[in-house]
Amino acid sequence: MRAKDLARLLNVSPATISLVVNNKPGISYEKRNEILNTIYKLNLEHLLKNTDSKQNIGFVIFKRKNKIIEESPFFNHFLEEINDTLVENDYNLKIIYLNTSTSTDTQTETLINSDCVGFVVFAVEMIYSDIKVFQKTDIPFVMLDNYFKDVDVDTVAINNHCGINTAVNYLYEMGH
Image (cartoon, rainbow, N blue to C red; front, top):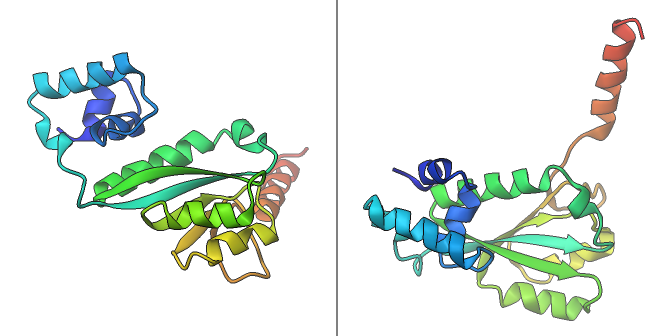
């Protein structure tokens, strides 16, 4: 049985299982104990393997206005899929919050001291000047849900123009 199977059995997300088996915060004492008890009851101790040798990938949540992330229906989906992929490839997920209320030097220091070998950045609230914080670290990163056409950064973003065009054409073809 894999962590994903245990998550299904306990009706929790794979991210929840990962947080428990990697002894990370963010899970209530009761839920953590329920998961650990089930692991021991089902002889799934292999899920509790030593993670000291695993490298960390940081999922950076960059907040400017502190509103968009809570409004995004895709945020939890992003996080779960990223976590599942990292676990399958023997990496740990480390969640890092950056906020524009702190200085760029403090933000850079936070990233450098995070013990991460790379970052996946939820960049929906970012602007061009925010990218410098990541570039100063010399740690690889990819931006999600934002596109910076004049800056050489790796980005995964939705093509809103194409999506809107496809939707309008479909509605037109349907006679609307």
